[in-house]
Image (cartoon, rainbow, N blue to C red):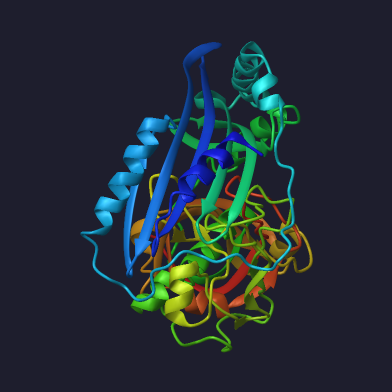
Amino acid sequence: MSELLRIADRVADQAEAGEQVEAFVSQGTATEITAYNGEVESFTSASSAGIGIRVIADGRVGFAHAGSLDADVIAETLAEARDNRSFAQPDEWVALAEPDDRTPIIHDHWDDAVAAMPTADKVAMAIDLEKRTLSIDPRVTGIRTANYADSSGEMALSTSTGIRATDRGTGAHVSVAAMATEGDETQIAGGYDVDFGPTNLSVDKAARDAVHRATRLLGAQQPKSQRVTIVLEPRIAASIIGITVGMLNGERTLKGRTPFVDRVDEVIASPLLTVLDDPTDGRSFGATSVDSEGQTCRALPLIDSGVLRGFLHNTYTGRRSGTGTTANAVRGYRSTPGVGAHAVIVAPGSGTLDDLIAGVELGVLVTSMSGLHSGVNAISGDFSVGADGLMIRNGVAAEPIREATIASTVQKMLTDIVAVGADTEWQPGGSGPVSLAIADVSMSGA
């Protein structure tokens, strides 16, 4: 038994008659190194630990947290949670999760090398990344950032309703932003590599990724306004799919703040599109055995061949909606459980990014989008963002473009998907997107 679980158990065991108690305990470490001009520009290494306690009785919930696992501090936090409960409004749907009868799929995503690798080797990786990026193409004249980062985290959960759960994981990545210059023009683009630990990270992969992305946009001009098919490489498609899945959040549906309310079992997308949240897939950096309420995670179909199959729920939103939890509670020790996806995966179609481009007569390969937070209305679905990329003419990537605006609605973009690639690219956040082609998008420019 882990020490974190022992701490959580001791708190949950203090539940009084008529009271439910939950203890969520976590600890973690994080390191980040930035190189500049062949030297360390910044180095940070931090550890954190804390506990969040919920106390529920008579439909009222009290919550308190502390950034310490000292026994006296934990006792004070439990007392504070009980006190806070007295100020809460009663809610008939408030209660802790109950144990489920599912068998969790255990993932081994802990790499001892995160802690064992000497700091000097991590520093060398950041410095080598900067040096390698500058050596690939003479048009790369500078580096905005060259970073190495890693983290490790563990959590334990115990409730007076009988749930006991633990999880842990590590991660590491290198990332670089290259500045490519031609004449008076400068383009900046980033590249990265990510893994569960530092041993297999490729500095060369991250460097070449950044250089390719920065240099291919040199000479970009603002395009003329027209309607085009846009092709999204996986990391850009991840943004569109992520926005869509955000609209399938149970908290939003209960408040009516999504265009997909009351559309379960209706067609909302192209039949080519299947999206699921699958934290059981061990390839994902978001894979987990249980959610943050201790419910067993499973593959959850969200969009199945274009048909909406359901929404993401934690215990609370599942009770209110009458559907039950989908094991999508997410939280840190400083907060009560919210709702979120763990590992959003798009079912692969066929072909590579080049194959999708070859199938487009007139279009744009979108290489970056800006203004996603301000340009997308998650209630109405309106979509208007800035975009850079390469024009596609007769199935071939052509001249670079910049300062374009692409506009549509999320609903229309989903139904106008005309091709889905088979090039799954696992993202640092845990998603597994593929390339997408979307027809009939309005592009505004010169």
